[in-house]
Amino acid sequence: MKKYLHPILIFAIFETVAVTLWLTKGNIFYLFNFSYIGCSIALGIFLYIRKYKHARRVVQLLVGLYMLVYLGFIKGENMQIEGFWYYLFTGVFEAATIHYAVAKIFGPLIFGRGWCGYACWTAMVLDFLPYKIPKAPRKKKLGVLRYVTFAASLAFVAALFLAHVGNIERIMFWAFIIGNAVYYAAGIILAFVFKDNRAFCKYLCPITVFLKPMSYFSLFRVKCDHEKCVSCGKCKRVCPMNVDVTDNSRRRENGTECILCMECVKNCPKKAL
Ligand code: SF4
Ligand code: SF4
Ligand code: SF4
Image (cartoon, rainbow, N blue to C red; front, top):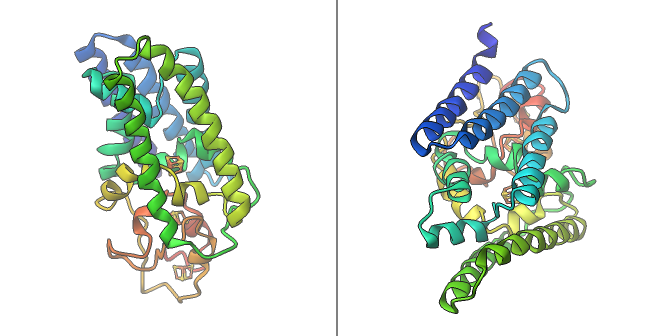
């Protein structure tokens, strides 16, 4: 039973958030929403412990499809960064703002970039592409593009408010559809150009402007036992995000890029991670 402590703990954390938001906001949707996400993640960790090869992909599909199809397309919630700005400007602490607070701003202090490994609906599709292990070195300078897309998303929503455009809700719905189409197209093109499924995450994704600094302080981290490590370098070779996981310091190379996918752990021949 002890080995299932992690999924139980994760489920308990999500259930606490679910019940707290349900009672404080008086909306049963929060109970359903966070219970579903907590169950999906706990199931994924359970499957991982049981050594099921596709455990992470199961969670990615359960959470990613729920957010994209149910919350986005059916319920009309813009959960992309434009939706976050929109609700922030209107002062409404609802779906998108809560989602960002939990998954992308404060949550990473606990679970780092777990969102990127287990829930993001953009990466859910990109991870099906053929370059799971990057075939070329990282282009560090291109990372500056994330600030451009971040500023563009903010400027777009600010312009709608400053121009007093009517029916912004409708515009935000279409912004979600078009924004996702653009992200998928850009993500797929970048993956093939750089021979790296996660090139979009590394260079263009605006959400990393929140995720990277917060995940620097993450409680959950993969650490290396130097007594066991034989410096074979396999962990770095299989890492989709080019993290030097053998360095235990917070300043490890690409440390704020770790998506907790556990590929390094699975592939370490000495069980040093
Ligand atoms: S970096 Fe962006 S696109 Fe990539 S997984 Fe994270 S949130 Fe999704
Ligand atoms: S794969 Fe394991 S043994 Fe090899 S360098 Fe990484 S941590 Fe060390
Ligand atoms: S392979 Fe290891 S270091 Fe790289 S992203 Fe996955 S968990 Fe993090």
